[in-house]
Length: 115
Image 1 (tube, rainbow, N blue to C red):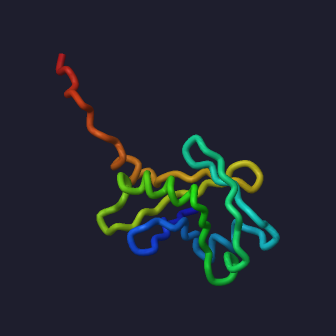
Image 2 (cartoon, rainbow, N blue to C red):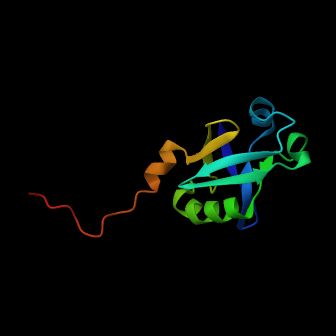
Image 3 (cartoon, helix red, strand yellow):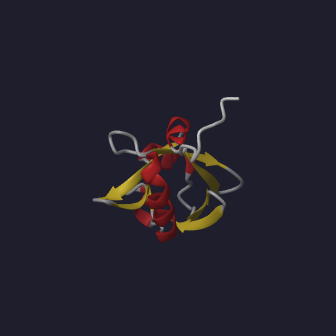
């Protein structure tokens, strides 16, 4: 599923999941979700308003990770979309979308040898 980084001004607050994705992937009795982000696995509590009018996953660890990674992957319009891929049980793997991942490749310190 495609999700967006949620911001409050300049700071990252979490992930905006979207109401359609919430209905499709998150049962109403689910209290938390495990997110695989890089080499970390974090458990994020789902607030009661998640299923009503605030389809957002917020957690200080998630926000810190997103803020650190998002600068390299921001699109020209400033919006960053990500993929949330179902994994085992109630967990999801968070990835930058493929076209944005290419922007994250940093240049080499030294040029390649033309030999």
